Length: 221
Image (cartoon, rainbow, N blue to C red; front, side, top):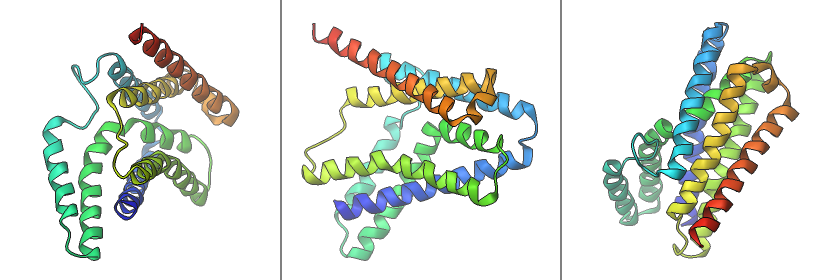
């Protein structure tokens, strides 16, 4: 479990880094156009609204989740991994699963890395600074995945992400996207201030947690 999970998480982070590198270089080429910032902000707001919607109406209507039609293919690849005859085959099959799963993941989570790279290009940074910020983003991105691997490994597969937990994560990410999108649209200069940006993210997270707590209490009464 550690090996398969570790390989999957590593290549997920690597693929996301390459994906964000493409966004970064695209914005560095055409990023001087103000309309690009507006488009990025509107996409962020739309994606944030869809993710927030998932908390209240999970998989109802338009949804940025892995479609049920794609899951049999993912499960089949997992079964191939379980039947691997050697360590090399196991690792290669896990890499293949990571590539396949992340094709869908990119479609579901493209908004936040797009906004992040757009914010980077609004600042005058060196090449090394741009890529170090991408590395930092992807380290943070894989941390929850690694925690899940640890939980599953220590529980020998007994711990699974429940639907309510998934809804909560969708709400938190949606609120963060909405906050970033509105800021990028109305006052992009705010995002050049680290303290202001962190404060904005904290406000979005706290707001989402309050909604989750209220919803849990309502469901248990």
